Length: 115
Image 1 (cartoon, rainbow, N blue to C red):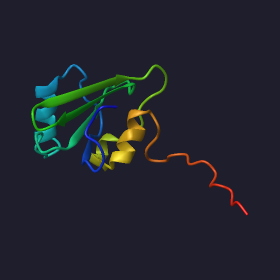
Image 2: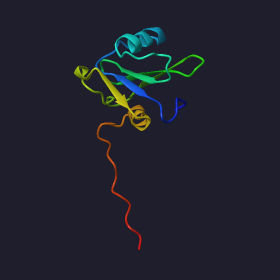
Image 3: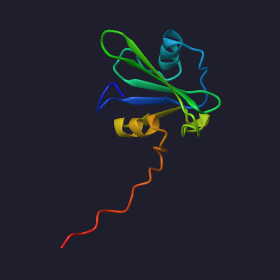
Image 4: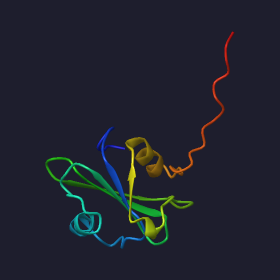
């Protein structure tokens, strides 16, 4: 994914977001509901009602970037609306974008010791 890179702040808007919203509507949610400055360099993630769609909003210094992904199968893992806002690491964002449950990633067996 072409995007913000490592070390970026990531905020999830817990609950459901209207996926018809564009950049201006999502920036307003980031400012009003999440209490963050949309042009501050953070990534804001929003999920639709069905759970198979996600939008990421990011300001790269010159303008807004809007990433949109629809899963063919499954749903994006998401916190409950009662959580309000969740904060993720850039590694967790990468897992989320791939549809992996960032809350409980499945790590394979540790490497075998070589003698």
